[in-house]
Length: 467
Image (tube, rainbow, N blue to C red; front, side, top):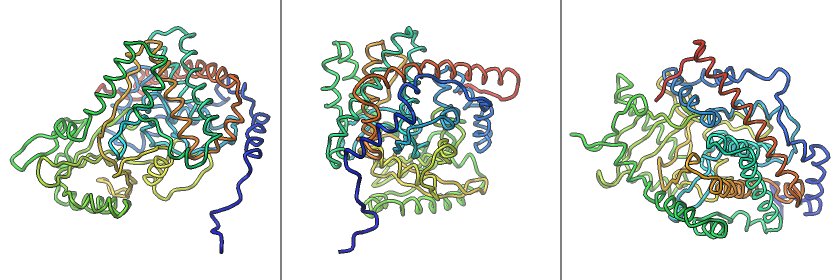
């Protein structure tokens, strides 16, 4: 029998662990304990402006306005700045499929195809191959920044960061001892989360956790349909709320021609789905399309919501087609080159998430300005429970940080080498303590960058709008 070239003899667990321990000599764990800006560090406002150059000009001020609401909101939109900060620094070489933007709000409750609630990473716009610690550092810094926003003292912030990194380290050690398929099947459903947290939660925390899971189950596509559409003489249509939601009919002079082009886009997207899911999609017909403003870092990229109907007006399907640009990590990391950035996002999501949207796919399209762009497509909303760090007390934030750290370890173990990463991290808390120091330093840096953007607005260099 001829063995396919994709199969090859793997290093033994002992060899993999030795590789991880050897990475400590290249990059000691204690070396992660601080952040100092490199000489000639790029102007943070300039980094954001370069991103804005490829975005819708009328929405760029909305992006800046959202980033200026708080240092945490700024951080959410500053993944490119952090990528430029981490890229030149020595790294472990222990590569995984990175989320690329692993901050607190990108971990949430989601619906599995089996209609179970699971806790997982949600945002993959910046997914790319890279050293595992880049995601851990972005998550750790977000915890410190969120803690500062809540007025927590530095010791409390550090405690939450260390709880997160400890959970990552301990779970990675668990994965290092597991069979490969067991790692792939591992997931954090709502029942398991409750079991993990019960021993550490007081009555109030249990109540809030139960409310969060119940609320997530109400955030369905039918709720989104009711909220985003209205009855018209022609049937249900997407309701205008410019500039946040602008129907296609209000953006172009010839909606019929654009609708024809969009049908071709949907056909291209359908080809990225498996045959049974193409069959499912074929049960729906296109009704309406609108441009939507989403998130913080994504504001200004092209994002469309697509309304399709099945049997009648009470049988909707809402899709979101979001522009996928090159990952902010791409200039700083090696990895596979993708001819379609939407495909990169989808491939990364499927590697990282335990259960992805059944209608997740990608396509390529020519925009209203005549320029070709890549998109990924998914259902607009399906059982999503979003954390609210600003409402968390120190104990609840520490618990949530633990959940995020453990979830990130599961994501990394699917695509990386858990044996090597666990060997690098070791059984002690040296890496945990180091990341607490890094998180404080980077939170300081983030505040200065936040102030720099505010100064740029006051000086008239850039314009901000609150929307």
